[in-house]
Each structure stands twice: as structure tokens, then as C-alpha cells.
Length: 262
Image 1 (cartoon, helix red, strand yellow):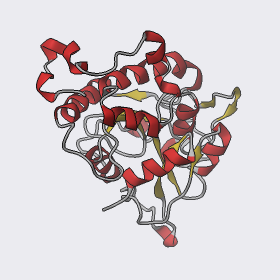
Image 2 (cartoon, helix red, strand yellow):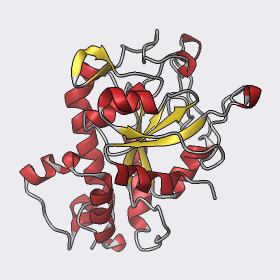
Image 3 (spheres, helix red, strand yellow):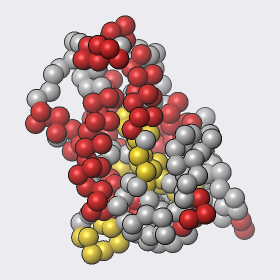
Image 4 (tube, one colour):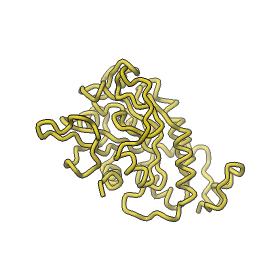
């Protein structure tokens, strides 16, 4: 298991003392595992959050120029969060705790210190001062945000194109759309860029992209996850919700446990 006392930036390699040492081939295959499998490995000390961030960075580098799913990354911030979790790795046992699993956040939620565009030129260079309630909840449950996924402008649309970033495409067929408005999250999952990604849904914005890209996502009941913080989402009694997206039903259940409001 990882010994927190050995965590020091000058002795970086010691962070895996006592852990299984994976071959290069095994490390290159971690992105193919399901989220619940990776969380079990994290909990057992068989892999570190820092290793998984490296895996995600490599996958995004290899695929994003084709699908344009994750236009915003924050790997330095993610590695800082990873060190925090690794230093306190024995203190967490709550249901839904993710033990340092990297995740992606839809670019309609603020992440402190990270670009927050909502797909609009009006906010193309905006940096968030604070994180949305959902992001705070997930980070408190041991998730590590590694990037933000593409959206239509202000999440208004059933595709994922805007004037800030290239249009997101389905990794199954680059001639076709990923859907929207959570198309960036769905395409990222289907491209194996990450294991879990957030979405939001008012009239299908989680469900349709999941269907377009062969991922899994569903609209949860209003109030079950922290509110978006988006203005006007309760108009006429209609509630936009934050919902889990993954590549399997079991992983969606795992993610919902982490997303649920206290």
C-alpha cells in the first residue's frame, strides 16, 4: 500500500513503495478498465492517482484532436489534488468515495482556478474564482478534476458546437455528432479519455449524447444532486439536473453515490 510518509516531491518514485509495479503494457491498458475496477485498485494501493492522471493525459493527447471532447485541461491542479489525497489515503471510507479517480466536468460548472467558458465568446477567457457545489461535492468525495468537456453555447442545443472550440464529434464515426448538450462528456467517455464525466439534463442533454456515443447516463430526480447554479433553470417548474455519465451502468451507480447531495 502507499505509505503517505514517503510522499515527497524530491523522492517521487517512493510514492509506489509496496505497490504492484505494472508493466508498460499494463499501464497503457488502464484506460480500458471500468471506473469501479480502478477505484478498487486505488483503494487497495495498487495504482496511484498520479499514475491515472498520466493515463488520462496520454489518452486526451492521443484522441482529442479527432473528437474535440475535452478542450480545457488542468493537469497541474489535478496533480496538486492527487498529492493531497495520497497524503490522507487512510482517512476515507464513506460510500461513494472515489479515492483519487480522475474525472471530467462539463463546462457549465465552475472549477476553481480553471477556465470556464460555457461555450460562449463572452466568457472565452474567464477563470473561475470558486467551484460549483457539484464540483466541491465530488472533490470532497475523492474525485480529481482533470479537465472540462465541450458544450454548445450556454448548453442550449442538441449538438456540441460553439464559437470558442472545435465541434465535438462521435468517436464511432467522425462524420457524425456526439449529441448535446453533454456531448463533450459522452465523446470523452467513448474515446476512453477518462472513466467518469458529469453531464446536465433538462430535456435530454445527458441521455441523447449517451445514446449518440454508446455511453451511459440518465436524468436523476431534481434535488438528488447539487444544483447547477445556472440562472433560470427552474423556469416554469422545469429543473435542469446534474447527472452521472460513464461507460457502464455499474459505473453510473458509483458516480451517483459520489454526486448525491448530503
